[in-house]
Length: 114
Length: 111
Image 1 (cartoon, rainbow over the protein chains, first blue to last red):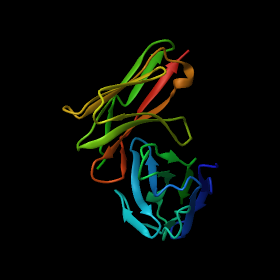
Image 2: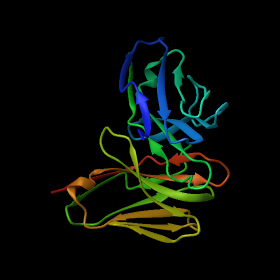
Image 3: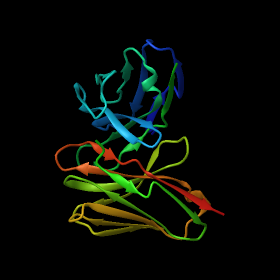
């Protein structure tokens, strides 16, 4: 199993540009989520999904969109990038039944918005 | 707002010493988890303690949970240079699937 994969690893954007951060998992996990990590702030939840076709907002959703058309994929879209979105983005997944506890993280995407 | 808050923010110890960090949270939980993050990497799950458990061990890790005080502690015994990392607590709330993370404790183990 590849676990949770994220692409790209690093991206530079100009203010106003849009882009999609990709996330995929091959563990058949129902729950997937996106976090951003900023210095001294820990991880803050952006959006999450409990299954295909179901998404919901987390703590800091503004400026981001998500969709969940398949169990495996959970892309995060930045509609119009702003310097405040410079951060490291982590995708994660976990089961929602049985042994739901452990959350698996991807390696992260470092985003710089100029 | 974040559910968990770790204390201290940073910790520097000598190799071989023990490291203790604490986590406080606000709402009812199913379980509390601890994760480690090495610099520039993703988070790795270390240990989970359920709400009906008070103490749990895994190798050199010892976790305690006091639900009456809404607090947990992580003890790393006989620390090694490889334990240098940031440690985060995460709470699994009763009423949803979201894991909420604290700001973390940065541990530096000096050789």
